[in-house]
Image 1 (spheres, rainbow, N blue to C red):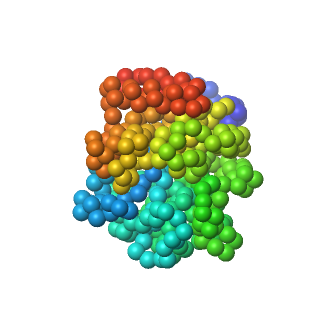
Image 2 (cartoon, rainbow, N blue to C red):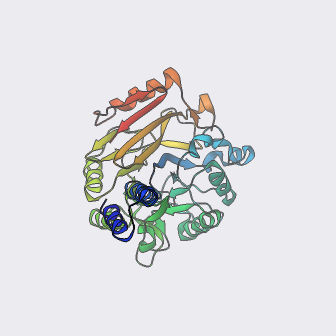
Image 3 (cartoon, rainbow, N blue to C red):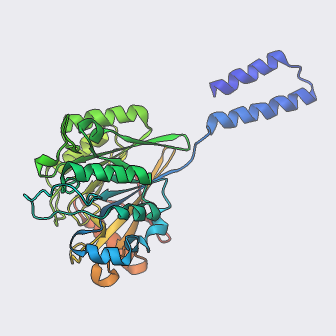
Length: 358
């Protein structure tokens, strides 16, 4: 408003105030006022987040035969509605590398699968997980190369620790958005070092420093965390503590992955925490990984809303295709989410939309 006032006073001093001059003055004053109150680039920013994506493993042959876009076919129209759409890429995109045999499950996916991610509307992936290094540094470096060629952003993994910690920053119509990714899962050999490729470890001080730095560059900061206990809805003690630390440090939202099933949602101060979004487009036939959410975070000035989009991923019902839920079945999933620990979530409904203000 100060800019508007000074411009108006300057105009008074330099111009006559006859009818024609007065009209011009008022027109210019109105334009200045609008530019001051509604700066260029202002408007809603939509950041979407979904769960684990793994298009290989035991069912890779079927994935390849059906086409890697097949798992996204029914959900892609929703994925394309965000300015930024983030998933957890749970397998390296490579045909090379040395397999890490000291763990039960090792995944990798053919490099051509990256085109399906792009076509589906995925803009960004987190690599901070316990599978990005299943085929060693070479597998991770191949993944980074494929993502870069496809124009898909990535966080949480890199050729060294500094690269793995680096924020991905987007400029959305004048609003800067920063994304960060970290893993608190084993094996330790997957964690990046100063001269070693790997994932960004979720070390408290380091994460806090990174969030503070990101907040100086961006108005909105979203952090992904690979943590928790697989197949369990209960939270590990450290999850709420670390998630709240992230919000206190400047994050606006925390997105969790790793348990393969949904965990609870918590509003904390001016932030929101999704402890686990579970699987999303995952080559599996699990009976417990039956539902997930596509989360649509809407930032519009001081207004912040998380829209919850219920999704069916139960193989015996939808095959390998994540499918939006509607009606009674969507209601049932939202009711289930509200009861998940810490079980204090207030969700309001507008038509067929489920919203959480934070």
